[in-house]
Amino acid sequence: MNTGTPIALAALLAVFATGCASTKPSSTSTVKPKTSAALRPVPKLDLPRFMGDWRVIANIPYFAEKDCVDSIESYALRPDGKIDNWFRFRKKSFEAPQQKMTALAWVHDQETQAEWRVRFFGLITVKYLVLEVDPAYQWTVIGHPSRNYGWIMARGKTLPDETYEKILARLPKHGYDPAQFKRVPQLPNQMAWLH
Image (cartoon, rainbow, N blue to C red; front, top):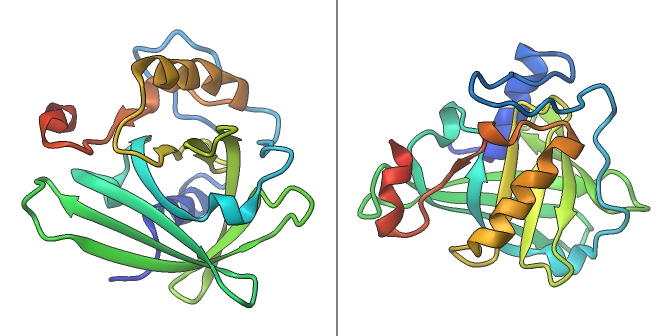
């Protein structure tokens, strides 16, 4: 079906599969993230500045994004204040045809503008939280209250290793286990990340 972004689809799974804010522990991680507190979005998001294309640099893998490469999450502010949301990706290869899924989002928390709702299938509405955003709006971290799903995204196809490692190091303060995040190939020379 060509509706709903992977972020929204993951959130739907969280609603039906977990029903609570819990983290699936990684068998190799020694990090003990806090999961009892509610996720807190950034204090203030510049919504127009946040619009545009974001490359998915890393995520907690799940079925809809399995084997995706060249993944791009996009947002466009509409005249009615809602946000057109679409996701473009290729499956398993940079030579594969680009696919696209769409959804509709809107700001839920008008004070911060960093907590959204995303509707897909015309029926299901889920939470979307901007947990971190670079002061220059070059990277962002997106979360879901279940903490079973998360995304690190950037404007470009790559992030400096130091920046990426610092983001991972901060994930436990949001209740996430950084070992659950896997890199998403944005360039052909990164294909080994799929295995």
